[in-house]
Structure formats: C-alpha cells, structure tokens
Image 1 (cartoon, rainbow, N blue to C red):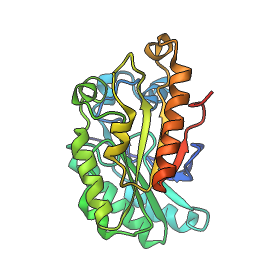
Image 2: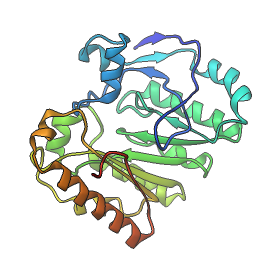
Image 3: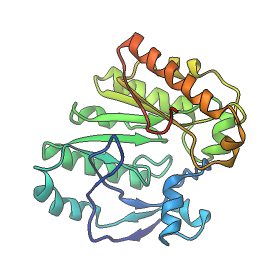
Length: 252
C-alpha cells in the first residue's frame, strides 16, 4: 500500500444530495468500468495517469490529523459528511482503508456530526454501534454476478452487499441504496422490480441513469426506458413509504 499526504480533507460538495465530504484515498481497487466518473476526473486533472494506477489506491496517511484540525473549525457549518464521492470508504478486501473509515466516522460522531456512507464493498457490523443518525448505503444496479464481473470487477458480490446492509437495518440503522448507474437493456436484460424487491427494507432509494457511455447512447430507446424506470422506482417507494430521489438528468 502506498501513502500520500494532503493539506486538507473536508470540503463542501456540489453533488445534489451531499453537504460536506472527504476522500481519504486516491484511487479505488474496485476498478469499475461504467466508466467511472471519479477516475475520469482524476485522470483529467493529472492526479492519476492510467486505469492500472487508479486501481492501486493510495491512502492519505495524515487523514486523522487533518480531521482533528478541521472538525472543530467547521462543525457548526456541517450538516453531514459523506464518505466518499471519489473513492470507496469500505473498499472490498482493503482492510486498512476500512479501518481508517471507521476511525473517521467515530471522530465525526463524537463531534455531533452525522455521516452518510456509500460503498460497493461490505459494510462492517461495527457501524451499528455508532450514531443512529448515520446513514449507510450500498450501490446496487443488478443482481447478476456476470454483470458485476464485467462492470465492477473487484467490488463485493451483490449478495454480500445486501446481506451486510440488511444486518445494519436489523440493528436499527438507517439504510439506503444508490441504483446508479442503472444499465439499459442492451447491457443486461433484467427486471428492475427484482432489484427493488431485494432492498425493499431500506429507508431511501436513489436512482440514476448510466452516463458517459456510447453503449447507452446506442440504445435508441434510452430516454423512454429511464422515464419508465424512474416512474417504477417512485411508485415502488410510495407504496412502501420509502424515501425516493431521482437523480437530475435521469428523466426527460
């Protein structure tokens, strides 16, 4: 594992459902091939050069020291902190990053700050002992392991993600799912209802389209497809009293 240092850690995010965020690693071993927006941006700005470099993450070694300095200064401004938008806080099989994420979340909670978490890894059960204001989420766009092997080659199996999320739900934690980027039928034939049913226990579902892909653009019915999917998600959530958010640009 390689290490880097940074001059700051917390920053205000422009993402539509975010407040503050942190990214305590550069790169992500999951190697998603959607393509990955985080990888595209880091490559564009010269922080990584190649895909092979991206999937060998570097840990920010002074993460906790930066948080000790920044949390007291910013805590009155922060509504929540999201882990993470350009890396994964519970990277599958990378224990050092997972341990660092737990330590960071404890620091925020000790300061009265709630955290939201999103991962393609396995959420640790230790999260159940932290603040019940926290919200824990997984990315889930299919139930097919063949699809995961093609598009999320080194991420956790879908069943493992769901099982870990359900364990936290059963311990009284707030749970959510990001169904983004949801694939079009030319990428995989599947029923959206099956994916929704697998996570019908959660408190919130966020749904979004597949972006930056020539494959999706080649599917000429993609606008009608995403309009129908968004309506199905909204109706599913209304029927079960689940909070719902359709990402901007998904519907036309």
